[in-house]
Length: 152
Image (cartoon, rainbow, N blue to C red; front, top):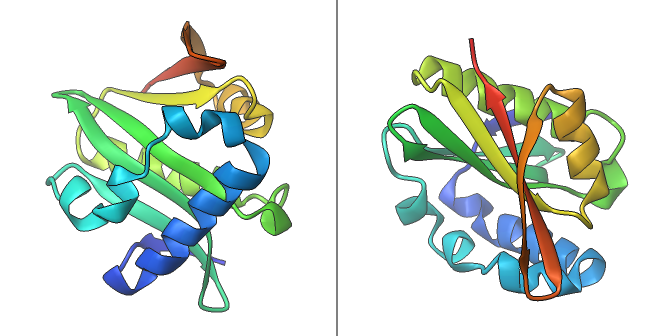
């Protein structure tokens, strides 16, 4: 497995992976995660402190994680998704570690990630990596949770 910055040729695989996971596993969450950023990856993640990472194996995108500047010293992680076939094998942790290394390099002091309460594996990963829950709110039938990690 390799973690790298996305390339335009990855777009169909990225969109396919994320939308398939949302449709199959989290159909109620789709309203909370509209696909505009996926449809315009180059524009969405073009800032000097932004990136979109993919985990790749055998020329196949098996995981994703976007980093977006949210405030001068705060980054938000988005689209942390792993192909169900590869879960439990360290793909999500590797993506998250690479995203956090990028954030440190860019001078961010904290990182935020939002997920829904239904995304239990993402919540477990956040907790295991030292993120602290600091917010929770409802968006229709979906409950979103915000986690924050201070970088040193």
